Amino acid sequence: MPADPETQIANAFANVKASLEAVGGTTGDIGKMTVFLADRNMRDLVNKPWLAMFPNEHDRPVRHTIGGPLGGNFIIQIEFVAVVENNAPGEQAMSTIRILYRDYDRAPYLFTLQATAKRYGLDLVLEKAELGGRFPEFLLEGSTDFLAENYWQLQALRAKGQPLVSLATAVSTLNEKLFVHPSVRAVGDLRGKKLAIRGIGPSQTHPQPMAQGSRA
Image 1 (cartoon, rainbow, N blue to C red):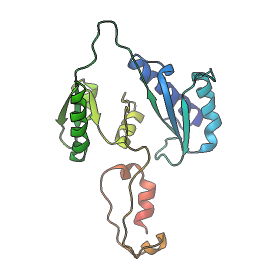
Image 2: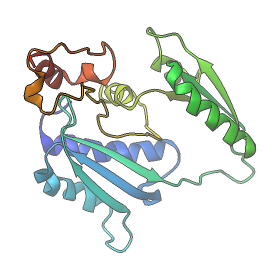
Image 3: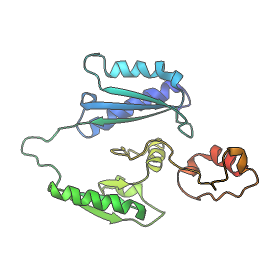
Image 4: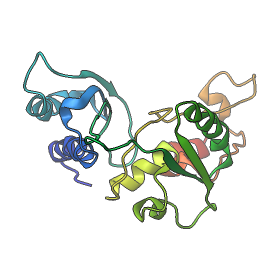
């Protein structure tokens, strides 16, 4: 991943364009864009590719910029909502979509999604994958249409160059919480206390906060 902020930001906008073109869309299909910046002072660097992508001030999507830690060497992350209508004459939309999931905690919302889609004539085939081992490869090989995976894992895979596109996400910020005894009122109260830390998940991509917590 480029360490240079200007290059990384330019690459992020290029990925947006490439993601839309891969499904037959254009940046003109974007209705809303959310830009996450590690440093809000980089807004000026964002404006350059933003204006190049949307030169018409009367025809631009809504843009929302959020500043805060992104983890790793990420300087920018972009989420966008676009409506792409690219069915050719006589071409039918997909009637079946295969979704591969790995963790059982995905099941409740996936089965809810499946039941809802059924009402609109769309069949969702849910397939359970084994924990560990190969997972994104099934998507890259065409064995499934979608992966139901946590946001951070998909972002890490995308940063490594795998052509994955996040279509929907429930959260876009680190949502882990520290649960403590009611007697703990401040961080200083944690000194000398034992902490139980989950061994897998987003925490592994954020070693600095974990290291601070383990020294408390």
